[in-house]
Length: 252
Length: 329
Image 1 (cartoon, rainbow over the protein chains, first blue to last red):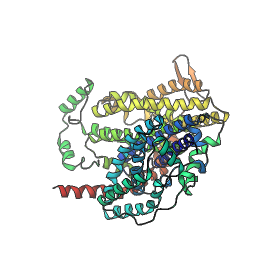
Image 2 (tube, one colour; image 1 turned 135 degrees about the vertical axis):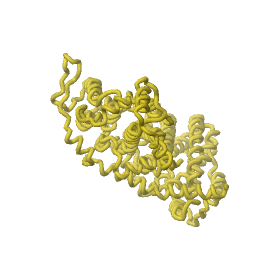
Image 3 (cartoon, one colour; image 1 turned 180 degrees about the vertical axis):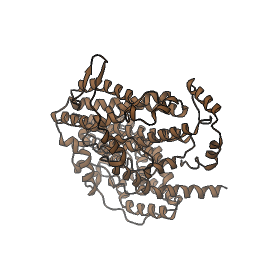
Image 4 (cartoon, one colour; image 1 turned 60 degrees about the vertical axis):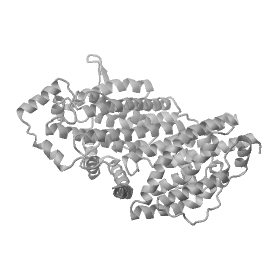
């Protein structure tokens, strides 16, 4: 694979991950446990949709084939989306949502942080903006993880169950392929094994603070980055793409 | 984060103890007549307080329930830009709800109490949100017509005699005005788009026109709260005056879009310089207020479900805060 093709694939995967998580958060609008959480959730969703747009626009420029952000979001089918599977998991209850956010964002912030120093200026610029947003998301997510873990018996049991449900998807975050390797070598992209070590250290400490146990479930083999999704994904994109695809001649 | 205790007994009773002597009432009215702002700590007649609590909390509830019909299209928005804009708009509505609950709290009622009244069905919200959003143009129509009608109602509220409400409205009106323009822009794109899109735009106008006119409330002859609210300068214009203003502004916009307002009696009256419009179906208006609109049950169920589903989360936050307060002590 040529380095520029790897960079394009890498950028699209970042866009896909941001879009899919943004879409999941959008589904939560009007269902929040408190008005302040409605505002926070909408902010996070807006950040992810915004990041997806930036990654896709950059991908469109790298590709140079005249495609737009909406072509990437609306006119590709499931196997062409390279998001990690953790972010496509259904929202579940508030505990599931918080756990998904924390597990993903403790990884993502490190990925973005490295990318701020990568040699592709477009990607570095987007990462610099996104990393600030995710820092704020994490402050929110971590506070809730501790509140739920160390709150009531019910909240502790619920959030521990959320952790068990979502834990198997975490391995994929660190399972790079040749795209990650080439972007690492040629553009200074992140070393996933180094991130994994930091992530495990941080997540174990966070769970301890939240009085939660590190799940003993093994990490599953997952290939979201290669376009192999969970069954939930088809419904997510069917809903997201329906209108655009139903009226292909229309502009909106 | 979690408001509570603002409606504690003592505070309210103290206020109720204040006798509403003719001198006090007269002095209060004199301040209103002099266009002075009444502030939270100022003396005010109990009926003024109750009227404001009713009106501001209804407004707050309308913002919160109003998130649902638009939220209905968030996952299906036809472009990422539209999705982001709609999301920002729905978020603004949550923010408006928050300021408005805050403004009402200055009158000595807690947000928890207001939310409980909404969920029990005691408090009302704007009936317009009991209509469904059935195609993407409905998102345009809500911005154009519903927010347009809301602005007509709300601009005068920026000069309302109660300071905290008037100030909250200044910011809300700025955001509403942006919402109205984005709605009109969606309609404009669709009205100039494919045949399918034009049909969607016309369909949306057909369904939202009359409910939008109903947003101004009953006609002046049937409006039970109007006279006193006008005297207190909570309200500045009558329902029918505002409705007429809305029709006069909106009909030319529909013409510009090439859409037909669904009113066979609509005509421009050269003498008065106003549009004359047909009779509003007041039976429908009262039916929807009474809970029999197409979405009343659905809207309330969604709100109650969010409240119930979030109970364990709020409970956990309180338990955690209590544990840590105990540790700190």
